[in-house]
Length: 203
Image 1 (cartoon, rainbow, N blue to C red):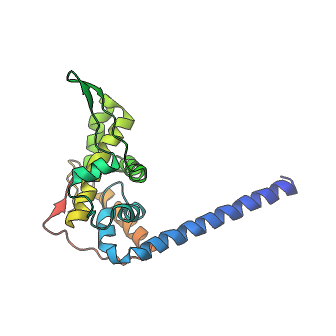
Image 2: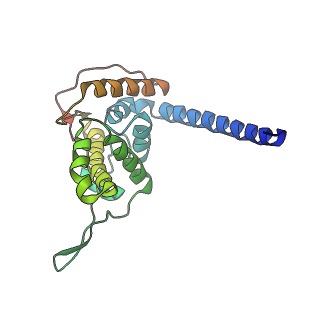
Image 3: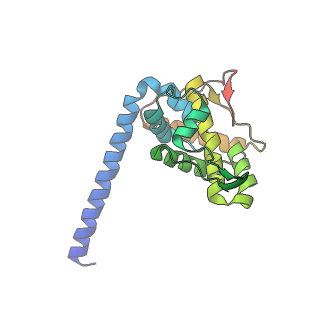
């Protein structure tokens, strides 16, 4: 590598370090702005596929209680993650989801891709049941819909998420819990584990 190439590479590395520093600063600034809604962030981040960062982004977009939406169906419609349907003479022509909030659609799509990898979760079970019949992309979007409904229930009704998958992997749950605690503490949140209350959001 000649001196010019090393210099150019050094400039790229400096830019990468700057971007990483700025991203860390923005994440901590968002956490500080949402400090009063820490409980909502923690409850939402506990859902498979979501995490501290995505929980903050969702709350920043729809509010800490999703108060604008009287029902989960209305929020799903606004986001555009409910199946669309065009029919003629009772023949379905198009099952694509309607257009909606592009930012929330991206978050839910990423969350669904992560959720289906959560061993034993209802999202993994739903995905495996659908993927062979409708393919990966449609199956992922089918998972995004219940994720949206659970998000509304957690924020709007203040409940906690409880996994009801048939093959719950306790080791995976412990690993995810520890990772989530680390992420929340990195953002400056204080985390204290408490037993689930009687009401909980289930998929």
